[in-house]
Image (cartoon, rainbow, N blue to C red):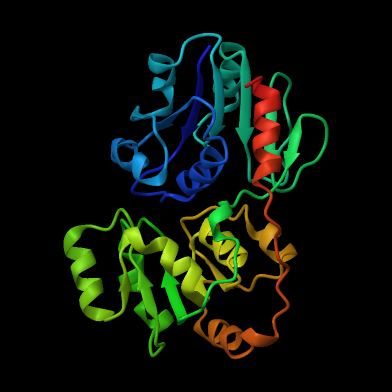
Length: 288
């Protein structure tokens, strides 16, 4: 029996799930697990993130073209409807689902990884890559990361949100070349996609719509501010409220400025390194 990890990525949803997959798979380096990605480009660059085996499969319903009945699957996606999920639970001998929904319910014949839920067969944890935990020199005062995707050019359409702020811009994986060139011209200080780690580790205050970047920044000792994109899930809001992370809605520039002015008095809740909890849960329940 083989073990697979399916992750949903794309030019309209970004790479948050992929970055989470990297954190989990890097904690399971001694295990033979193949990453399945809905984006062929991500499958091609996965090795740069320490993932040795990866396959692009285009859409979630193509998983059975690679994985066979009785194999094992870790599943991180919201693409599947209840019927499809039931089929997966029956098709795979072991099935672990990753959920960000605080109102989710664990089904029979599955295990669950969740930052909210607790109980038998559930790993209550927040996934963050170990490498972001540390005391890093904050050489960059302020950075802005809209996300790895911006198909509708909403970053450009909402320049007023960050107008007059002296910041470094983190570029995203799915930005078109002409769009990226325009952004680099407008923002003299840019982090390339490959410099994401440096941005996370070296930035004091990070304004971002990427939920995973919020968590990575928090682990690295940064002070993240989350702004809710209209096209992104709101499932992380309860978690961020619990962690005392400032949240901005509707490109509210006044609210952002208030948070930046008071950033040094905000009492962030810190997260401890916990990759061993996630990896142990996966090994135990997949019988690795």
